[in-house]
Image (cartoon, rainbow, N blue to C red):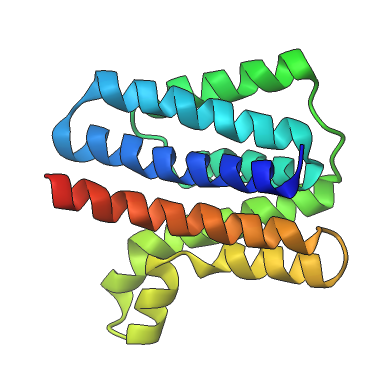
Amino acid sequence: MSYIILALLFILSGFFMKYSDDLYDENNDLTFASVLGVVCGIASALAAIYSSDAAYIFMAIPIGNFLALKIDGIHHIITLIVFIVMLLIAGVPELNLVVLLICILGTLLDEVGHELIHKITQNKFLNLFFEYRFVLKIVILLLAAYGVFDIWIFVCFLLFEISYVFAGIIFESLN
């Protein structure tokens, strides 16, 4: 599998993660949200199976969201089950616990900041920083800069984030 395929998996994961969540949160569409969640779970698991760098990211996101109490729908549970089952069948990649914890902390800070910062301050920079969840982006960039991750994983993660935002824009335009 090439970085092009890995990038495609990141894009699919980001897009369907956001679209699934918006369908559930805004339209109360459990069925379609769950179907898209399954697609997200499959894309995330395939990326994690192929690349241990991707595994850090795709394992940190649900763990960080769980700790931030952001797993708030059955569609999230279905997505998580698909992801975990695929990893258990294919084999969980060997990961460095410290690196995983750093990624989890980045995710957790993003999620908590996303929910709280606009309630605490009107600072435009901080509000944009947490609105677009920049902590994990910076963490992944720093891990790539220090040689822990391949720089292409950072590029793939940016594509994930861009597709996540794009899914929100498409959802809003269709509803």
